[in-house]
Image 1 (spheres, rainbow, N blue to C red):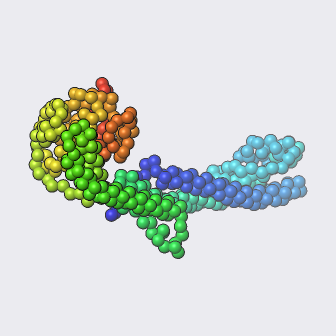
Image 2 (cartoon, rainbow, N blue to C red; image 1 turned 180 degrees about the vertical axis):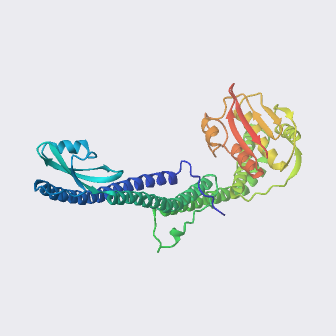
Image 3 (cartoon, rainbow, N blue to C red; image 1 turned 30 degrees about the vertical axis):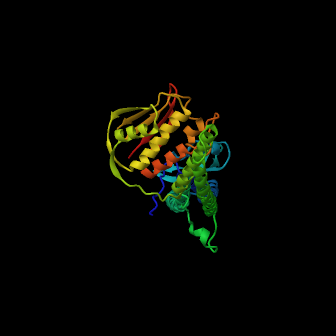
Length: 411
């Protein structure tokens, strides 16, 4: 079976990708800033040293009355005001500015008490170096982040795909498919590294195998007990028929009949548990089937036909489902009981106290009844099992104005 890729929205893959992207951006920004600051300091430092060296030479030449070089002058018009003020105050300093439209490293110092002698050094090459470095950092960071995201997304997607497979198998097991297994290759090869996903998959497979073994043992035990009870019950039934008429005989026959019914129910459940039941399809009109079931039950249940429909189904199994629902409504509920046929939906309703909460939430459970109700909880269990064989859906609910409602939806 081909596995579908997991949906990205709101998944672990998205969270991991966002985390990787944020960390990559933070790391790239930190490294970029460090490299930018280091190279800028080095470039500016070299230009500053050169400018100060030329300022010293220019100062000596000016004090000696010699002609200044073309890159030196007193109170040049392009000298930054803050640097001019520093020089007039009697200090030397440097500053990056502009001169004739290009980056310039200025160095200035005091001369003649209130004037500033300044030297300019072309800083265009240093500015281009820093700008080129910044572009290289941005492009390399973008490429590194993209590559890391692709590799991280691939790795995380492989993990999430395995997790989705494990979750899908778990849902199949919870739905009753006890043959479902993850079969992660890492759990079968001891030489391969065993990660956490493989450990979860192995634990799930082990749990499924153990659960399947226990259920198979229970099914075999149920079937064996029912088969073993059949022979003595047949003899007991024959002996009860030979007893003289009377109240004790009626009680014995009633209990023998109850035991035979319980045994047949157990045998039917064991057959349903095997999952090998097959259907014999035929065209049946639901209204006619419902009326036959009500007549066979010997009750006063009312059949209401809203819309009749002919369906392809197994009549015997359908009658078994509806018969159990009608019998349960009369045994545990209160009248009036109605069987409503509306297309492919058949609803059986009584006006009693309704189904127990556990049954509405989780479905019927074998040998569980509440409120002192008589029975073994097998009738509804058999109805659910036969409905599954038919490919139908049987649901249970309680009416707002009181009463239990069982709804059979045929496909």
